[in-house]
Image (cartoon, rainbow, N blue to C red):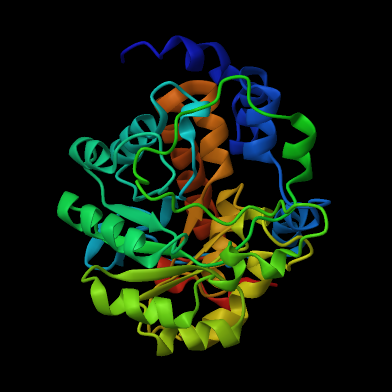
Length: 366
């Protein structure tokens, strides 16, 4: 076996679980970068609740199942995945590692896992596509204009991306108080390389005496009409990320979207939202197998993946754990996180008597 890269070789004896990467990442990140990647909105209630809600769920074990044909394979939009764990879109990975999104794509390819590239990436989407050997999806925002989103979607399709992920829950930023207290970064990054027209969520800061609701950015924020327009313009499967209730799930399906992602933006937009795992059953009841349903927010263990699948998700997205592993150990660290989560998921499947993902259901939750 080849030697481990120096950063990972130094810390691997102390890495037993995904969460163990976090303190090593903290040592390697500036105050501003740490606040950006680890913080949430307001008092960070939702950030913590995403984790706490998983911890409250209990599993029911089942014994003596036949595992002679067991596997974790799943199929999404015509692509086969070895296991139902994808890399979530994480912006500005150049703050985490010099190789930025290249390292994450390398790790995903090595593990044959899917990856959603953030539209605020620090590497051109075409460069990532040339490197990757696993399916890539492209994240979009509809701000500041839908023509910019369409242009990015067309670039992604031309480069071979397999699906589009439209983030719809960040028309404004939440009050990122931890970031405000940390101050500006010591090493500012250039503007995101894939966003010729901006494409960033609306900032929450307004001048004294000004109403946020009266700003042009809010008055012209995207609506369901924009989603319907984009769906009509693009050929790739379109998923909406940021769905957290039945009403929005129904409207999304009426708009013709091809998949739903239950998400609260990692607790970074609206504080006091319910945890994504608590929102999942309501959305799953609407999706009802009509479109693929994914979840992000709070995944730290393979048992968390198992719980999400039991409550109706077809797959999950993992963000912060991979960001911390990238900062601590580069591509090998990200690959290691995916491996740990997969093995823990498989352990839970064995203990709960579920040879395949199709066998994981609500009855597994005590």
